[in-house]
Image (cartoon, rainbow, N blue to C red; front, side, top):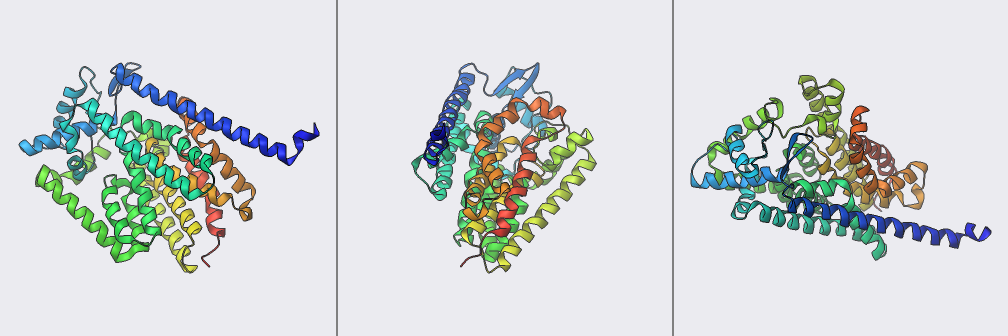
Length: 429
């Protein structure tokens, strides 16, 4: 028995355990993504009924946006009219009929950017959309893996872990824009860290397709990049608005704020499911039993608190004589997590962004000086993350009965564990 207690045996057992876990993730990845093609073959990928209730994927809304953008080119229509969107959508998903008008409240530049999809059929457009998203997600995960160091096995493990986690799979399942937002977010941090704020500002212009995350990304960009970042963001935004006016017409661009407000507050359309959100808003909806004024006020206060926490975090880091690479990564990790939990609109697929704090947080927790119990807990939690996300999905009904949003709770726990690492990380030499 003593030979099983030697350091050499423990190292061998550890390598076997890592390989077994990696193999299990790889098998799960193949099986779960294979299910998407089975759904496509059975005609159940875009719209179907589950338990007598209709389900429509997000990609149908995106493709519908492309179709409506094309019709704007041919003749002026109100792309933010629920009736116009609903009529066009029903042509795509018949005979499935949503219980409420399925509404897309993305900003005008999104309609302009997805316009080329209308040249393809919906199935071909989904294939192109997901293929491009998969390429960008894999490249982004590989960049995170290369930065973490280690041998090829560790890098392959990170890439497979990102793809095998439920947020990534769900992003492909519904064809979500989160597949593209994750690479943009990683590029944003890499450019800021590399001292290229103009480029980070240009990337931020594209990221504003998801407006709910713009306040924090703009705040950090302006704190770190100042006028050069602001110039890049303004230039990218101005070009996208000009493209939108050209393709959609000024009335559609000018009418967007009213359309966004009505979609988020009226309850007359679907696509804004407060009880499904994994953030402060989602938690408040569960506790209050509905998405009313109290929830909206609480969400607004959470966003303000998140902005304050992020500003304090980066200003404090700057007072220490600038950020070391590790400290920057940890502050960025905390910013991503705070952005997710305080945003007024965060769904499960958006937690693909958590790959960034997972990779950078694990690397910091691995340092010998940080081998505290919280650091070990953080490492164990990150390693288990791909499996945990599927547990959250498979037992979602139990979490609902417990009045708990699991991804939201997990993000809060990660903030609590990464914060001491950021506080104690060494300043630049």
